[in-house]
Amino acid sequence: MSETIAKQLAYRLNAALTNTSFGTEVPEAFVAQIDQAQNRQFGDYQSNAAMILAKQLKRNPRELATAIVEAFDSGDFCETPSIAGPGFINFRLTTSTLQKRLEELLTDPDQLGVAKVDHPQTIVVDFSAPNVAKPMHVGHIRSTIIGDSLVRIGRFLGHKVIADNHIGDWGTQFGMILWGWKNLLNKAALEVDPIPELLRIYREVNAKTKEDESLHKECKNELVRLQSGDEENIVIWKKTIEFSKQGLQKIYDRLDVEFDTWLGESFYNDQLNPLVDELLEAGIAEESDGAICVFFPEDEKMADKPALIRKSDGGFLYATTDLATIDHRITEIKADALWYVVGAPQQLHFAQIFEISKRRGQDAELQFIPFGSILGQDRKMLRTRSGETVQLSDVLDEAVERAYKIVAEKNPEFSEEEKKEISEVIGIGSVKYAELSQFRMTDYIFDWDNMLALKGNTAPYLINAYVRTRAIFRKLGRNFEAGGPIELTTNAEKDLVLKLAQFSETVPAVIADFRPNTLATYLYELATTYHKFWEACPVLKAEGAIRETRLALCELTSQVLSKGLDLLGIRTTEKM
Ligand code: ARG
Image (spheres, rainbow, N blue to C red):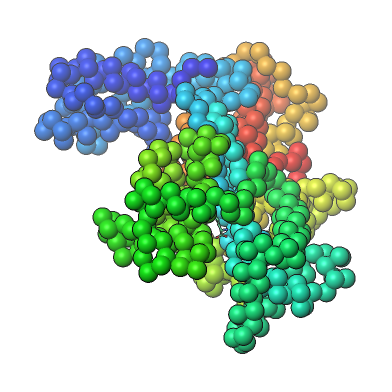
C-alpha cells in the first residue's frame, strides 16, 4: 500500500520548495503541510506553506506560491497546482491517481489503507473505572465509550493496548455499605438481584448519615475495621465487589466493551506504605502537620495546593493509589504510555501525580484525556424526573425500546427476533454515537429524538448508509468479486474515491489529539458522499467496467463504514 495522498503531495511540495530560486533561504526545520480542502471548488488538497514562508522570509506570499508551483513536479499524480487568495496553493488529483488508489484499497481489506505506526508502543488505557457498589451513572458513559474507542483505534494502528478498569473498590463508600449490610440488608432481595439491593442500602445509609451525626462515626468505624483487616468486614467487602463486578459486566457486554485487566484501587494497597517512604527518602515528599505531602512551589496553579499522600492518621488517598498504579504500569506492564480517560474535574489531581512521576525520573508518556458533562434538556446535569442521577442501564434500556418502536414501524414484516436484534444495535449505537460525535470537552445535551433520527449526524443515518451498500449485493445475488476493470467516469464517483482514500488520513489524526469525533465527522461525510453517489449513479443498471467500478465503490464504502463504526465501538446490521 502506498503512502496517503496527503503525504505524497507533501513530498512533492517539499521537493519543489528546495528547487525554487529561494530554496536556500528556506529554514531547515520548515516542512510544508498539506491539508484536505474544505471547499472542493478549487481543489482536493491545499497548502498555506507559501504564506507561512512569506512571513518568515519577509517576502510576498503570491510570488513565493508562483515560484513553488513552477518548481512543482505534478507528474501524472495531480494537475498543475493553482493559486488562490493571498497565496493558497491548491491541488487537484488526476483521475488516474484516484483509479489507482481505488484499486489499491480493494486489495487491503484489513487496514483499508490505514498504515500501522512505525514504532508501536505499549499503552495502558485507564477508562470507565466506576466506584463499586455505587451506581454506574451516565457520566461514566463518556469515559467508557471514549476509552473503548481509543483502545480500538490504538490497536488498529498497531499499538499494544491494555484496557484496564481501575475500579474504585476501596473508597470511603465501604463504611456506609458495611454498616448498611449489617443493619439494613434484605437477604432475599440480595439473592434475587444483588445490584439494586446494594444500591438501595447505599442510598439509604447515605440519606440517614445526613440526618444522624453519630451514624457517620459508626460508618467510619466500619471502614477503619475493614482497612485494618477485620475478617468479617473483608468477607462482606469481597462479596459486594463480586456482585458489583457481575452487574458491571452485564453492562459492558451490552456495550461491547472489553477489559484486559480489572486492577482496582485495592490491588495497590500493599504498595502504598513503601511508596510513601520512598518518596520521603527521595526528598520528593515531606511531612507537614503530621501528614505527608508533595509541594509544587514552582507551579502557579498548584503552588498553594499540595498533594496529600498520607494522612496524619496513616490513611492513604486517591493520589497515593494512582502513584502506585503508575509504578505498576511502568515496571510490571512495561508501558510506554498511559492514557487516562477521566472527567475534567480531576484535572488538578492528574497534573499533580504526573508531576510527581516526572520528579521520580519516570519517562512514560502520561496523557490526561478529559471530558465535559452530559446535560439534560434544561441544560443542567442530567437527572431523572425525581431528581436522582440517571443510571446507565436505564439509559440503554430506553434507547433500545425507542429504537424498537422505530424499527417495528418501518419494517412490520421483520420477525420479532430480527426486530429485537436490530433495535439493540441501533439503540446502543445511537447512545454511543451521540457521545462520540461530540468533541469530548463539549457539555452536550442528551436528546433522544436527535440521537435516534434517521437523518443528520446520527448512528441510524450511518448504519442506514451501510445497509444500503449491502442491499445492492443482496439484489445482485452474490458478494463482490475483486479484480474487475476500474474506470471512473463521473464526479460523484471521484468524490467518493477521494473520501474513501481519506480514511487513511483520518484514523491516525484521532490519536494525535484523542478526538474520536474526528472519525465520526469523517464517517458522516462518507455516508453523505455515498448517498449522493447512489442517487447520481445507477449501479445494477450500468454495464461493463462502469458497473464493476460502481460495485467496487459500494463494496469499499461498505467496508470503510463498518470498520469505521467498529473503531467507534458501534455494530452494524444488514437490514433495518
Ligand atoms: N473511580 C474514579 C471516579 O469514578 C475514576 C478513576 C479514574 N482512574 C484513575 N486512575 N484515577 O471518579
